[in-house]
Image (tube, rainbow, N blue to C red; front, side):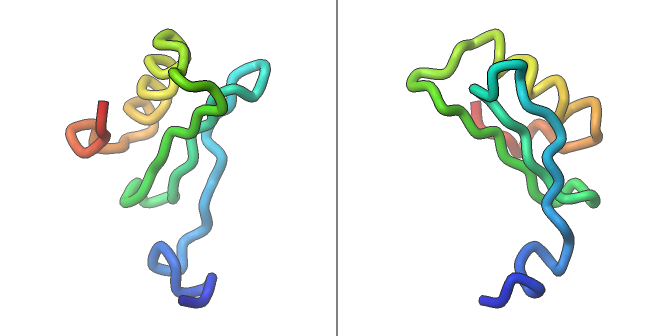
Length: 67
């Protein structure tokens, strides 16, 4: 798979990271793909909530995001 073919050729944006770079939200401009990444196991619930809020604010379908 070539990079230009991944995600329908869309760029992947960094939508948000917390102050200490523990949690990041990535997504495509169309909202067809998004992901929450955490450097901590388990992730802090308040940071995951903030990440989900960012995705929701940016129009991502939160029914498709795992809890």
